Image (cartoon, rainbow, N blue to C red; front, side):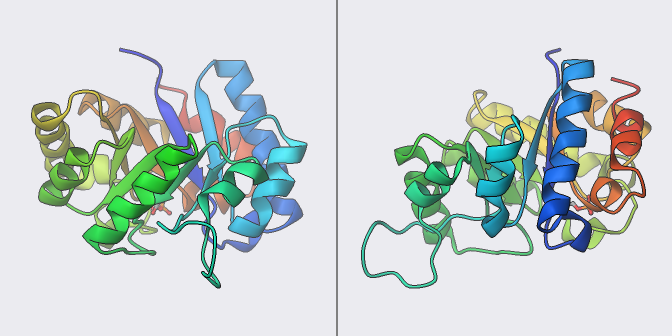
Length: 222
Ligand code: G3P
């Protein structure tokens, strides 16, 4: 199988805020270069420009609104994200839920600006629905396991394998990631063995005392 994709969501963790966002990105870049595994980061929106300017690493937005240029106060515009240096975006994270119409509009905007797209989902049916929209990735994350330290790939392997199967039927070009509670090498290994093509993760790395060491452990069984 091809090398996995690892996407590190900083959420609003203090450790990943401001200069911390840059430091964690540097650790990701080092581990990525040492291992040859693609590692991308999703800092908070105001930190995208800073991270993208200071570290040569794929940067994703944590959110994108399906709006265009004009009269839209307080929205996240795809062109602004792109010009800030992002190469992709999360859409519909469990902590930033959207309606189906909003997901479709965000996806359209992201594609218009050439951004890679990751639609987050919470179960097999929503994963199937998201895949039908044609993103680059869907990321299945059972909300109850997010931030729990209990890995989805071990606690709920069926939701991962079920998502992989459902997506393959709908659009084999869409890649499947999984996330929630992933932090150890064995969690990533189990995810890959279930057919996932990578992981979306946060607390296990961002909150680690030594994020670089945590990342090295994460990829140790790939
Ligand atoms: O976006 C990643 C996520 O929601 C999983 O969080 O802390 O369980 O790795 P965590």
